[in-house]
Length: 102
Image (cartoon, rainbow, N blue to C red; front, top):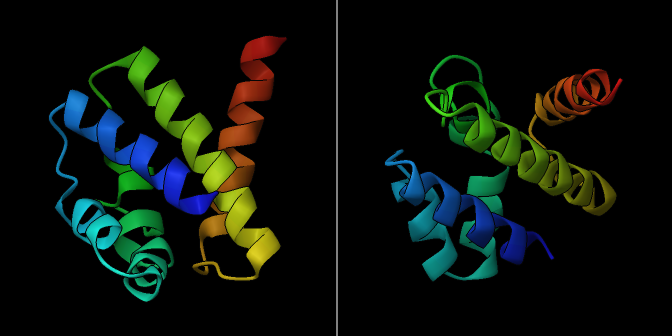
């Protein structure tokens, strides 16, 4: 499941001309390389990470990215393989989505 969500994220980043080199490379490698990327600061870190700054130029695209990252993060939590910031980002994305629905 994480691989398919990661593929959706890579496609979204490509559509919005955002760098996805690390993710694209990880998708082409074995599961160990993919997981190394999925727990990385490049994906889940602070300033400059995919979670923090990707697809900011498109509100619709950003919402889609946040939804995908929340799904990915949930899957990672179930697997017990997360970055130290994964849970924080998932909570933020889900909170934002919940407030948009109100």
